[in-house]
Length: 302
Image (cartoon, rainbow, N blue to C red; front, side):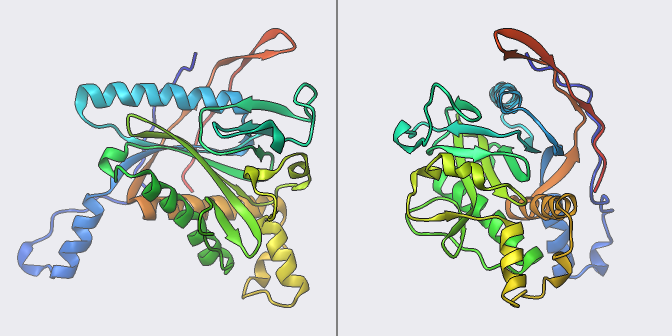
């Protein structure tokens, strides 16, 4: 059972006073209208924490249930974005095959979860930023291909604007690529046009656990990370103007990437964030015993 604590909302941008119509240009009116049209999005930010996969999964399903009820009763709901990291875990989507596991499923190197998201097997672990958008596509666009392309656009924008890394899509495949390396994976589920699950971006991730699987069922390509790409740029003397990022420790690189991710997500989906304080009590099973997991954290503005 998931219990949400009291919410504390703060606008990230000041409210606009209505100006004198005679003194405002058409461009200014359009800018004001654009700000006023931003959808409200609750931001649940645990990007510095390692949240067990089953806790985040249960939280998503609880929020989705709430939103579907709110839509039924009121016609709409606020969007929500959850940002976090996971301890090492493998997750399998609806298309997953054991043929893409390089280990005995009865004796896995990490916990394995079969989920209802689309896609194949992937790995989550420390140093990887995971975004779980729970949004009402009725108020955006009721098109799953559009939604996946928008998620890819968020990551492509982060890599370009913050790291001067040229990333792209690969025709026929989902995710974000730099050359032959996949740096971000996507897997979504939509229930009555409310989304959950989402995307995972490798920032400082130890990539060695990917050897235990065929990531996303793709055998002829590699997995990459932002940290690895910056290291390659430095060693090749082709730093693309990012030399000031080379000396960053892992924590700083995570922080910079996180800030850019939520900014790009807000821009792509036209959202205004309201930070939410949340408490997550949850029963988890460990070696046949139920263990209470609880996390309380006050979220601060960037």
